[in-house]
Image (cartoon, rainbow, N blue to C red; front, top):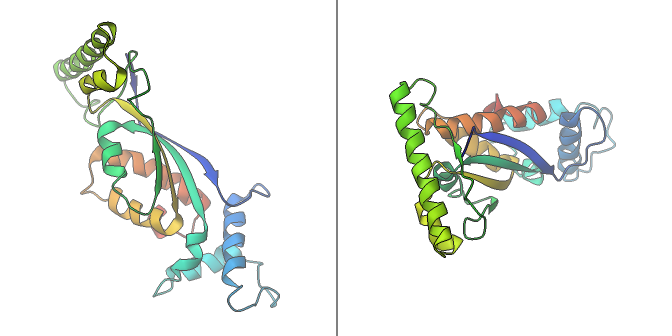
Length: 210
């Protein structure tokens, strides 16, 4: 049994990293695409302040959303099965999740819930016991000859899963608005706030990522 916390890792973007300032690279890529419509790439001062360009386009009302759809960001999220079930409801994303049909969960990894740190020692002990019982039932089922896809019924919702999620900046903005809101589940907020920090570093013009 291993106790883990939500974790986030950027694994891919369709924008090439040309230097130390990846935010500038992304903004330059967006401005280049945007100026194709008006063929103004060679205008004086064009392409010299791409982050400012993106900030103005993002904050325009109505927002010039289409140019931001050209940037895809892919994250690997390690979180609980319960939280992954909420995430995969988003439509305009691509997902690939660890499959308990094929992966051996005999050495169970679980995500510590948000209430863990403030819980009494008794509550922490009871929760840990539940997790250990689930792990033991799974192990026993496998030993009796059950297939992994059959034994997985014993796995708790707090078991850790790994999810790759790809979305463009407009969809990430939508996800962050929903999932960082105070109405979202606290474990979801914890996970998405970590994504928010990563996106805010790369796309400082996005108000949703601040």
